[in-house]
Length: 223
Image (tube, rainbow, N blue to C red; front, side):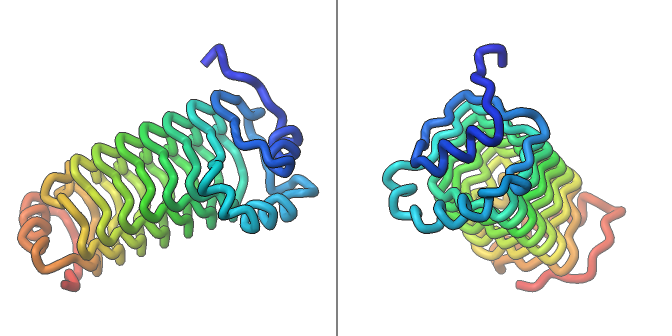
């Protein structure tokens, strides 16, 4: 990504606080820790208070490289982040409802307790991402890669899982009630189930997946 515009964390915070929203194709300094910034709490409060404006004028991170970013509990719903690189980022507790992360790289990121309700994550790379206890309801994960992802206790109700790669993903205690296209998900037989909640219409799909994986250890499904 040779044509990216380099940006320091201080500049990024200052521009957000000034109301700037266009950060397409920037490259933050690697290892940038926004949470250590003296104005980080002010930034978070500012974004929460600007939620109406964020809907009409969302933050644009399309094609940006924010890998290894630390920014927990950030409030950025409606964000336009298609193709954004957030690999190894720590965004636990952050809110990205109604956002577009299609084809984004979120591999190895910490998204524990994060919110992606009604967000688009089609073809996103979420390999080994920590989505423990995250809110993913009504999200679109079609053709996304969730292999080795931690989805323990995640809420996936009504999410679109067509073509989603669940190879070795942990779905223990996750809520999959009402998900769409579970039968079209990939490598479901290699996912880990333990007390996973599913809809009655998906019982046959999951039983088939369990039968295909003889070594799978599980307790029960709650339908």
